[in-house]
Length: 110
Image (cartoon, rainbow, N blue to C red; front, side, top):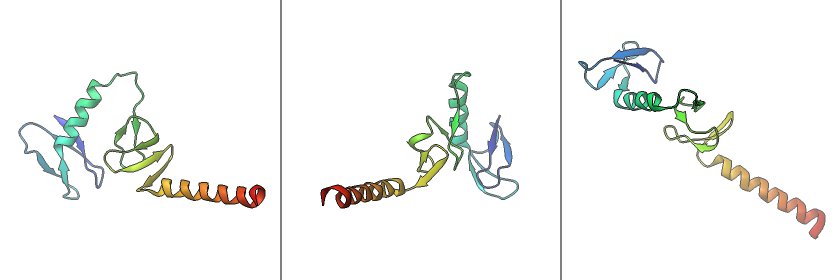
């Protein structure tokens, strides 16, 4: 038996071996992926009990680290408590580098 959490409303549903692999949430009728929850349950049991478990702040998936990492489920980039979707951190980094070199040129090179 596994307690599966609904991704839409957060209600916990108990799944056992006699139910099909596609379960619907009793509250919001959303399909719940039992296979992925089963895989996560096995990963949590194999993990060292003294290890720190880190979760993605956006989708609450287990991630190895919170800094400079892309979540495997929601594809958000994690920078500690801040998370971005897509290429926004890299575009912002390029803009900061461009502004730095422009200021350097105007102050010293010209």
